[in-house]
Length: 329
Image (cartoon, rainbow, N blue to C red; front, side, top):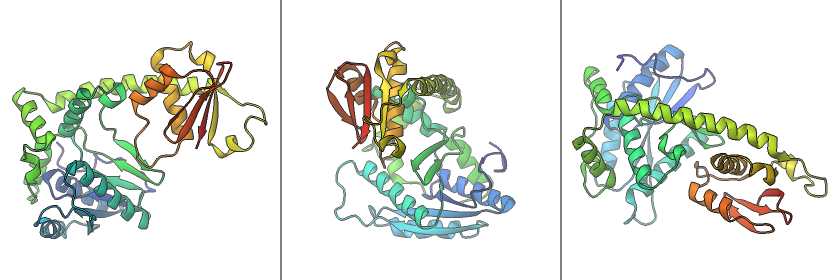
């Protein structure tokens, strides 16, 4: 890994303020330090956000410790965000904590007019994510792993600049720059799935850096299919008459698709066209696209005059079977 951050970050000049998720672990400490050095060279300000999940007695003290460790990072300020839950979670703890963490950071970004939140996901995280999604039967899009840029909301983008670096790379960076970090005990707790998977993968000799190349090849295939699907959707959209779609097309919450022509395309393209239509018409705050299983089910079972709901939309096939209507509800 390079010793400087100059070649790592790809942020346009419009992003004057950038938020960084700083857990205090070695990965996020390395990223925060790199971005702070980069911020000096590019006249930016970095908001370091540490979330206190309130799940362990030491969590507040640890958050404050992270602030002390990062207080000398240039062009940056440290902020502790606290999860004040009503009832302590007993099940799906990691998932609930993750959702709360992102919600708190997103709220901070909104209040401070920040539209980029940088997260220290790395190559080892990619491999683990791939294995989890493989076990759940994900399709190509899921198996491509996390993207460098994703939309959390209309106003906030998640940025992952370290996806080609391994955890060991980032720890080496911390050591070479004399940074301190917290070893999260949950990372080694066998009660959680990720530590168990991490141990199993290490035992089987999986190499995260080689795996990055595999993800690159999968992503190329995904991008090609996406481009075909995007062009297909453009060619199949029907304008409809004024009686059919009064003001809703102009408002962006209604779409008509030539279903007969859609069926002449390969099966995967049909699914992707339906997904893209829902993404354009529907409304969601989850940051995730419609679930593949539900898309496949609707595609297979849709019948004339029969409706289905997904992604905040009502999906209906016309009585003559020629037109697919997607309407935000």
